[in-house]
Amino acid sequence: MDDRKITPDGIERSWLGRYNGPHRDLREYIERCERAGEILRVPGANWDLEIGALCEIIAHKRSEAPATLFEDIEGYPKGFRAVSGLSNSARRLALTLGFDDPKSGVDVVQAYRDRMKHHRPIPPVVVKRGPVLENVDRDDDVNLWKFPVPRLHEQDGGRYIGTEDLIIMRDPDGGWINCATYRVMVLDEKSCAIWISPGKQGRQIRDKYFRMGKPCPVLICCGQDPLLFLAANHEVRYGLSEIDYAGGHRGEPFEVVNSELHGLPIPAHAEIVLEGEMTPGDEAMEGPFGEFTGYYGNPASMQPVVRVRRVYHRDDPIMGLVTPMRPPGDASYGKSVIKAGMLWDELERAGIAGVKAVWCHEAGVARLFNVIALKQAYAGHAKQALLVAAGCQSGAYIGRFMIVVDEDVDPSNMFDVIWAMSTRCDPTEDIDFVRKMWSGPLDPMAGPTNQTSRALIDACRPFERLATFPKVATASPDLLARVGAKFRDVIDKA
Image (cartoon, rainbow, N blue to C red; front, side, top):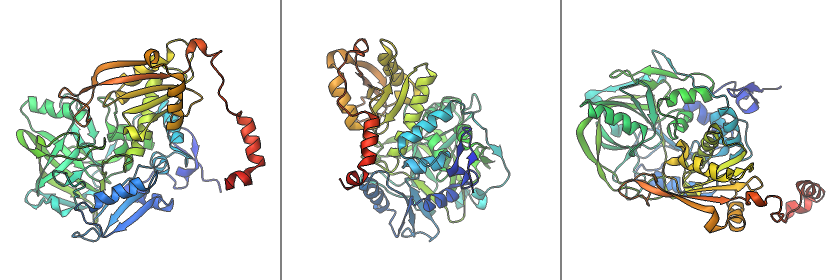
């Protein structure tokens, strides 16, 4: 029986049709991943360092390692669980976004780019009840230690409940809702501290409240549909709610319930949500924390405290987590794929034609080493693409190397990219530098002003020599296919 289904991008896709629609929540998503062989269950880990070390061992064991579901965590009730790596493979990303079962991450990038041509945000719908309200702890009953909050790295300054989280705030001027991923360290039973990098949207919103001398209301969501995490973990334009953006990818609105204290939208099917306020002048020491660049990017510092007055959670809650580390990590692959799709989309919206593929390499933590495959149409085409990529929203923050290659080079293949750089790039003619670009404290090369330079590397054949540039010594695709088919048995044994 044909189980294909029309998805939000207008394309028939069998993967989503197999389940008759998007997953309801994190739990159904985990079930679908498990059916696809994408979940590893780990019983009996301790919250203190063991969870973090296991995430590192599993992530470094092989490319696109499985998601890890931690059960029977030492010292906690049997039903309390934690999960990491949910978006860290091409298959899980495709399942999250409703794309076909892919052959590689490049397939997901292409599908993402195709959808963005007609993507439209879908605002959430407000409901009165949801599973997240199964348990509500108020005021004196709040105890953040009831959850298996991990200490992930040996040099971390504390236990972090917020790593794969949504920090939900309302802009005091426009009234729009921002959802972003910032790290959250638990200080004691009823308070935690949020670190937000300078320039980020959440920091801008928080500072608006503080300049008015008002507390900043905040929700901290610590277990949700991974599609919401994908939206929160990447650059969505200022003024657009990530909930709306994710709803557009889902093809139908998310359900939210209004929080008791501040009327902020709580994802109705979330696992754990904290509600409180940050008040000007109320600060505590936060950090250090091993970050996604693979370093302790910034020292411990005084950061605003969230006084938690409500905790909403489901029965037997599942806490989402990410263990940032030297790549590859348990979120680095998924970040590379989505970042590549967003960068491609911004290049095309800026009028850069001829883009054939984009890849943001894991070794560059999906930000520092980005490659664009381009079919050159005019002199200066490659340089134009480099400048846009370095300055657009998806490419600006903590960037380093932007490389453009010809369309015959696979940008996801580091060997091919280095070959192109080695044979088609004249360092004095084809490498430029842009100084004083936006970076942040998590960048180990950033100085006190949070700025670094960018290298723009044109590794394309010189446009004026396209017709005369030496031909590549390789068999034609037709010849390779014909010979490969004839000698398949021999090749399979090689």
